[in-house]
Image 1: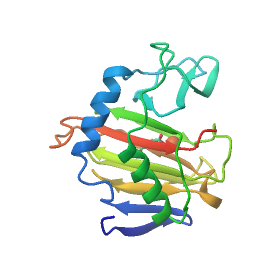
Image 2: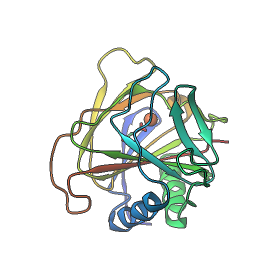
Image 3: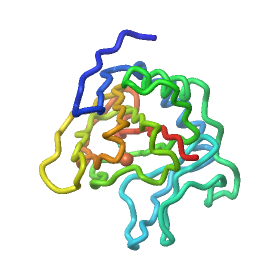
Image 4: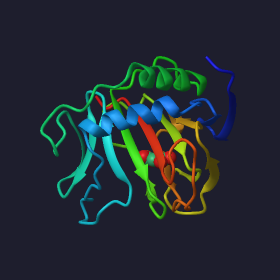
Length: 206
Ligand code: SIN
Ligand code: FE2
């Protein structure tokens, strides 16, 4: 395991700077996942369309439509199972969770987010998982972004953390219900991803 500096963002919210670097192999794996389960912009229960495009790998995939948020075993777009979670993805999530203070994390879901400039994610919490004792592991790839940590309520001024290529954020325990988001992506060019940012969010769904 590479040396990693663990930087506290808030209680039980930890930034592992550069822990997922180099990200080239992750980007290549995302390409293989998207060839089977294409990126798509999901609808929200309220009828909007998300600016972030998503796909999944692993046994369970996060999905949103007019009926709500949930985990599904089959990709609604193709009817097929989600592509398997690559072993290096699961290993990365397990190691990062342990460094963040949450040993024993075995993800069964990996949401892959793709941001183009202008895409953003409003304040929300990851709350569709069965057992909230497991943490969330969030890996940033490509263009930098401002990760917003609101904490217990979605109101108020968030803590702003610049997340760059290879950075990992882990939260759990008392912070598991924390509200968070991502500020509108600024245009740029990154050697690993070109004009894009990706994020891998690892979860234990079931
Ligand atoms: C998310 O909350 O699902 C995305 C976080 C990120 O893109 O950094
Ligand atoms: Fe989230």
